[in-house]
Image 1: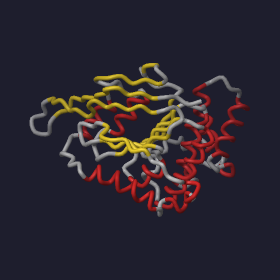
Image 2 (image 1 turned 180 degrees about the horizontal axis):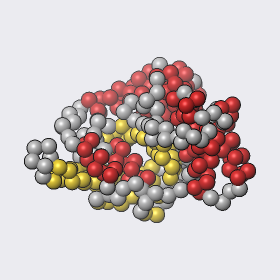
Image 3 (image 1 turned 60 degrees about the vertical axis):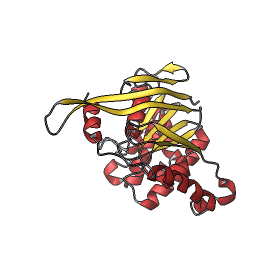
Length: 278
């Protein structure tokens, strides 16, 4: 199953201390964000550094409450984290004393309702889905960066969430591994039909993965434009797709929108830290 996500007039404001006088000042991260993501859709989100992309993901995940507006999944307001939504971050957050299989089982233990044997079988099935069957009994220190991220993806999918939220999950990987995992993620998405929201700084990645690319403005973040990506993947083949004229045209369209924006110096990093701690 998959779910529709709706954001209406969403705003997010933080109070941060200035570097000069240490006074609390209002910091508007998001303002009037409207976004409607269809069930089973793969949407990528790009924008200038500090525009609030990750804040949007936090709000959808239920890790924070908006200062204004509403967020809902299938019409039900988001009031906190839920098993219907799963998050994959750039850091793998694997437990070093657990094997790959045991790390996947961790999510199933939290969900409950399965026997030990059922958890092991399901963990094995999702490790197979991400191509790690042979590494099920390896510990994180025995895995490459790409393999660790695959384990994290398998863990996030294992309890079968309706929504998968991904915050630059491939950002720390080398280019070759990153492209390979992008292709594998698309294959998994087609097979499962999960609704995916994917945050990235990389324009090529946004165009390659997304059915639609939502381009955000500089702070305060808003959805400036949504570009529907209609690539002929079957004709080009995913390996050659990035070299196609179609792909270049979409890439230039997104790049032009971002280039027009001049992000002001902000306290975004401070605001996000305050937000996380709070």
